[in-house]
Every structure is written in C-alpha cells, then in structure tokens.
Image (tube, rainbow, N blue to C red; front, side):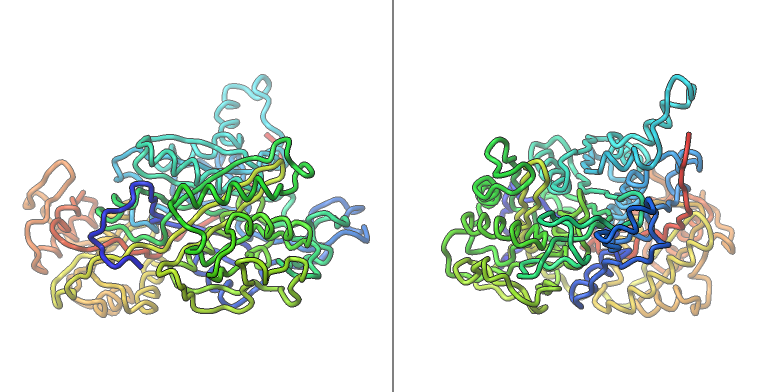
Length: 594
C-alpha cells in the first residue's frame, strides 16, 4: 500500500469507485465473492424439461445440459426508471440488466445519478445476436409511428444511450462490439475518455443473456465448449468451458478526483490495452501468442508497471489445453524472466463463459481480491497440465484460497480477455491508495439518516438490508453511513428518516425498536412548518446540528420538502462507503411479437 495519502497521484490512474454484478449463483458482488473464496461452482446441470431448444438437439448424444443460469434474465423493475410496461417488454433483456446494473454501480459508489452534475460517459458491450433471438425487430412501415420508439428499446446499439437517458444523465454513450473481449474494450474506452477530459465520470460494463435461456451446448472435439459441462482451467483433463450469462458494470473516476471527493476506491486501473491478431492469426479465433503478449506488455507499459510487481494474473482460461497453452505462453513472453511469483487463476471454472461479460467476471474477481487482499482458488483444477510447464514461467496456479502476500510492496493484478475474431485486451489493476487517518468519530453527536423508495414494501426492505449490513460490518462509521445515504440515493416518494447518536441507535431505529419523535416516515409524518427553515436553491438549509433541529428537518423532508443535505455535511470529513443498493422489485417481461 502507498505509505502517504498526501502523494501526488499518477494522472493516468483511474479509480474503480462503484461495482455491480449479476452472475450465475450470485445476485450481488458480495455473493459472487463468497462463492469464489469458498470454491463454489455455479454452473447448473439442467433437466431436459428446463431447456428451451429443439427436441432433436436435446436428444443428441453430444448435447451437454450445462449452463450458467441467470435467474433474473427475464425480469425488470421499470417503475424505478419511469418506464412503461409496454416499453419494458420491448427492451431486450440485456438492455434491462445493464440499466439496473448501472444504477447499482452509481449507488454502490455513493452517488445519486440525478445529482452528479457532470458529464458521464457510458460504455457497454452486449451480444447483438440476443436482440434477434428475443424477438424479430419491428417493421417500421407496418407497425406505425411507435416503431421508432420500440426499435430504440430493442436495438443493441442503444443500450448505453438508454442508460444515460433513463438515469437522467448527459455525456457520451458508446455501445461496443468486440465479442468476448467486450467488457475490457468498454473499460479501455471509458479510461481513455476520462484521461482526455471528455467525461468526468464513467460507467463501463457488459451485459450478456444467452437465448433461449437456459440451454446447454453441443460438444465438438477440439472446440471450446466442455464435454461434461465443467470448466477446468490449466487442468490436463480440461475439455473447454460452459456457456453462461450475466452483467457487470463499474463506476470510474480519475484517482486524484476520487480521493478529493472522498470516494470509496475498490481498486485502480493502472493501464489498459487492446489489439487484434489480424492476418497474423494462427487460426481465425485463436489467440496469437505474439499479439496477445504485445497487448499484455502494452497495458503494463502504459501504467508504468513492471512485470515483477504483478502478483496475480487472471487468465482468460477457457479450460482447453490448447488455448490455455497459447495464453500461458503469451503471458510468459510479456512477463519475461523474473524472480517474483505470480499467482495465476481462472474464474470460468466458477461461472462458465459469459461471452461479452466474461472479462467482467475476471476483472471483478481481481478487484475484489485486491480489496480483500485474498487470492481465491481456481476450482476444478486437480491435475495441472504438465505441457503448460509452469515451473519455467513466472506463474503458479492458485490451488487454494490464500491471503495475498506480495514481495513487491504493492498488490497488482493483470486480467486478460480474448475474443473470437482476434480480439485481445488486458487490464492492469492496483490496490486502492491509502487514505488519510481520521480522528475517531465524535460520540453522541446527532445525525440524520434517510431512506426512500417508491412504496412502503420497498422501503421496509431497504431498512432491513441496511440493518443487516450495519450488524455485519461493525467497522462502518455512522457519519460515513449518513453521508452516503443522504447524498448518494435518489429521493423517492415514500420516505423514512431517523435522528440518531450512534450505530446502535440507528440499528434500533431500522428494526422499529426506537421510540420517540426522532424516527419518522411518510405514513406517519408530523406536521412541520417548512417556512420556518432557511432555504436556498437546493431546498432547506440545515443551520443547526442539535437533535430537535435535525428532527424538524427530517420531518420536513419526509413530508415532501426538498433539503440541501450538502449543507448539513459541509466541513465534515465523512467518506462515501458501499451500502445496500435499491431493492428492485422485478417482474417478468417477455415479448414474443410486436
């Protein structure tokens, strides 16, 4: 870790300040991380009745009934975004998942999209084939004047512009087509835009829903899909991978700006690089070692990173001996001869191959590994492929989950993503910079905590989830929690507020165990004369910090008044912290025709 928080930050460094994920077996990034450190495989083995494909295909002796199932692939909560049910059904599942995930990444970073007040770029990859499989595109001539609106919901191209529009943002919107390297390309473009000053913040990610869903695959010898449905990275008995779906998004900002804004930083993007094999490909779609090696080396050079300081290499790792050998050879050339030991891992053993989002699974694994200083095991690796010749490389397979120790004095990870058609991409991540020490939180000072939702049921779920987080993480400071809630969440119609002096009081209030007039909600709000408070263009200005004054402000806010919470937190050293995001209430939306 960096010793001094007062350092001059590298102007090329980009902070990851928010993250969101849905993957097979994981609705949240926390569940995903728990699955990784406990070595769980989230690929499902399906009954024939669960598979929606042609009967002849299912009964083929080469059909493998394995799939990384995404249980929310057909569901969406349009009400949060002001989207009609008709439009929700028109939107492809990838559009819907990306929109909800981008929202969660903002909230995880402690930001309300409607209050960021800056240019935000959105960069995302999806699978163009999904739109055609979801429903044939509308015929503008025969459908009529609504066809344009419907086609914008349907089109893969508008996934990122829809996210900007429905979250109330302005900025760049770029939808990326780079097959299985799509997530990495999205992050690369986002970082370039931030470094050029074209945007102030950026969302980058990928969304993949394989249709029909769920489904298995046909096994063909010497192809990348597994014979038995299991992916075994670097294993002598590997036969490929299984298919899966998911969505990953990250919220990005230049590091110096993130530190100044008191953001929570999961990891830092030190460097990124992309290239294509072109005519040099050994075979179209296979990795070309020299080109992939050049891509990996370029990402390290861009970030000013020497290979001996990269102690985790998260491989593309398809689990097929031939492709694993090509990748390990390429990475070894990029890293060169070195004495440091680099852990090598592959997340596809856990979640299968997510297409355009597969690199996102690997990047989020690496970011969380940096955050927790832990190296998750590579599962399904029981017999290391001797042809990989790991002893002559800088790499050691990560067989067991372990603490992440490093000889270099700082933790760094390289993450490779390879796409059919010759696409290569590599990211270099570094652990978050050290933060300045703070004085202990003042005991007994009253503070306001706020929550809001579209209805009372969602509000109750928010209270329960926040209470569980506070109980599970005793290190969360009350001032940070209130700062993140008051400034980092969209204000909705049903509201709840509490004036509390400690974490214990907040937990009691969230549990419904507090008594007195300092906990209030829309359903039972006291009358307050809003005109008795000073106002500015952003609403009521908090001029006092005593419990009675704060209770009056809380009551005014709960009854629908606008409050300038920034004035309440001005002059504090509170920081944004990750807290539970909005509890979407998804319903099934599925279109079969226009």
